[in-house]
Image (cartoon, rainbow over the protein chains, first blue to last red):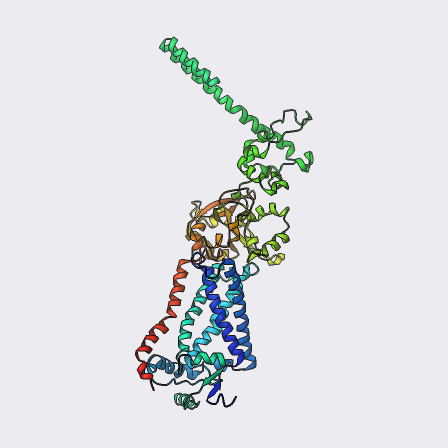
Length: 227
Length: 370
C-alpha cells in the first residue's frame, strides 16, 4: 500500500468522496428534472411530469442528506471545516489575487500553480471563497427553499411572511441556476491538473500525485512573504 | 289570438270607414290594445310578488311551519329562483293553501335545467343523490357566487375527507395542497376551460387558537374600508376592474400584511358530467398548458349576504414576477419570462470560464510542455 502510493497524498477521504458523487449525481438529476418541471411544454426527458416531480423531490432529499453528511464529517469528524472553507486574512490580502493572477495570466505562460493541496489545505484561496459561498449560502438556501416548496400548505404563513410563494419559487429557480452555472466552471477547472483527468481521478480514488518537488514549503514561504 | 283579431278588425275598419272617423277609432283601439297588453303583463307580476310575500309570511318562520318547510328569506330572496316567484315551481298552490289540504306540487329541476340535468342523470351519482341533495333550490347560486370550500361541502356530504385525501395521495403529488386549494369540480367535470379566481384571505388570530388563513367575510373587509365600498380596498379607481397596478399596491401595502390573495382554478363553464376525464390524470393538463390558459382571472369579493361577486382582473397578473399575485404559483404554468431570461444569463455565465479560458489554454498549450 505504502509502495503503491509513494508519491501520492491521501487528499479525499471516503466520506468526502461519497458526499461529492452523491451531490454531483443529485444535482445533475435535480437540474434535468427541474428543467422539465419548469418547462413541461418543451422538455419531456424524464417521461411524465409526475415522474419528474417525484425524481426532483427524491434527488433533493438525497442532496440534503449528503449535505448533512458533508457538514457532519468536516465539523465533527475531521474538524477541518473552518480551516478548509473559511478564507484567512492572508487569503484576502494576497492569496486570492495570487491565484487569480495564476489562473488568468501565469497559467498561460506555463508557470506552476502557486497552491499545492494538502489534506488540511485542499483549496486555494480562490476556491475557498467560491466554495464558502456555494456551500454556506447557495446550497442551504436552495435546499431550504425546496423544502418550503414541498410543504407549502403547512408553511403557508411563513411563506407569506417572507414575501410569497412566487418570490420563493423565483429564488429557488435563480439559486438553482447559479448552481447549474457552477457545474461547467467546476468541471473545467477540474481538468487543470497535471493531466486533464488528474483531479477527477483523485476525487474517485482519494489519492493525488504530489509531483516533483511539491511540498508545503513554497506555500508556507509564500504566505510568510506576503504577511 | 286576441292580438291577431285586433289586427284584422283594424284592417277591416280602415277599409270601410271614412278616414277621419277611422283615425279617431284607430286611436281608441290603440289605447285599448295597450291597456289590455299592460293588464296581461301586470296580472302575473302582481300575483307572483304577492304570492312570495304570502308564502314567506308563514314559510319564513320555522316555528310556524317546522324546519322541513322553513325557507330562509335572507338566503332565498337573492337567488334567481326567487325572482321567478314561488308559484313558478309550486304551480298547484291555491289561495286556500294550506286550508284546502292539497299537497303542493314541485316542478322537476329538469324542466328548466334540461341540459345539466340530463348530463347528471347519466352519471353514477344520480343513483345516489337527487338534485336537491346537493343544491337547495331555495338557496342556490351560480358558480361565481360561491367559494371553492363551499362548493366542496356538497361533495363532502357523502365523500369523507380522509377517504378523499387517501385516494388522491395514492397517485397525486402534493395531494393535500391540491385538495385544499381546488374545488372538486375543477377536475371532476368534463369542463375543458378554466379561469383563476382570487379570494381575499386573512390570517387567523393566534389568540383565538386558530392557525393559518381563512376567507375574509364582508364584515371583515368592511371594517377596513369603513364608509367606502369594500371593493375600494383593491379597486382603487372604482372601475370594477382590477389592474395589475392595483394588485401590486394592495400586495405591497403594509396595512394589509395579514391579508393575502389566494388563487384557485375553477371551470369556466358549468358541467354536471362528474366523470373524471383521462387528461386530468396527466399533470401537464394544468401544469403545462402555459400562460394562455391562466390569463382569465377574477377577484371574488364577498357580498353582504354571504356570497361573492366577481370582478375582472387584468390579463397577465398571474405571470407578474413579484407583487401582482405573490401567492399564486402553479409550477409549469406561472413561470415568469423575466426570471427565465435572468436564469439563462446566469447559466450562460457559467460557460464563460470553460470557453474563454479553454480557448486561451488551447492557444498557449506549447508554453506548458515541460
